[in-house]
Length: 124
Image (cartoon, helix red, strand yellow):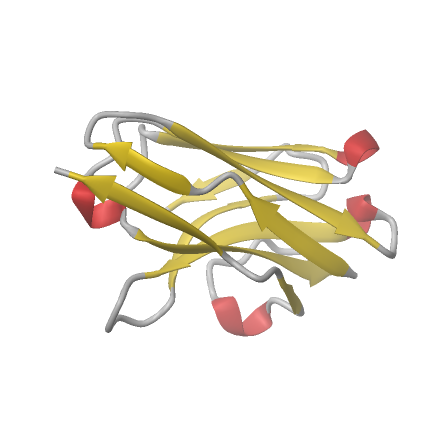
């Protein structure tokens, strides 16, 4: 599958952004989808993930209550709505797909496919 993430940009602290990731290839509903991010000089970290039908979602503690992950299998799209953004949210955000997974994982190692990343910069 090929993933393409977009929607990043520059926003002031307290603002909002919506990231989207579209997929092509195998049926989208076969994938658990996740968002990860990597800030300069730091390791890639989990942000949010969603089960194949959207019934289960998981969030990193640092974004819980501010970010919302959702998916539209008919449109092969997963979306990350980010509210109340903070400067520490600044990072390159990646969408990822875990094919045929029974569990929704927060571990980037298990994800099979990755998008190219989109940069989110939050100014103070």
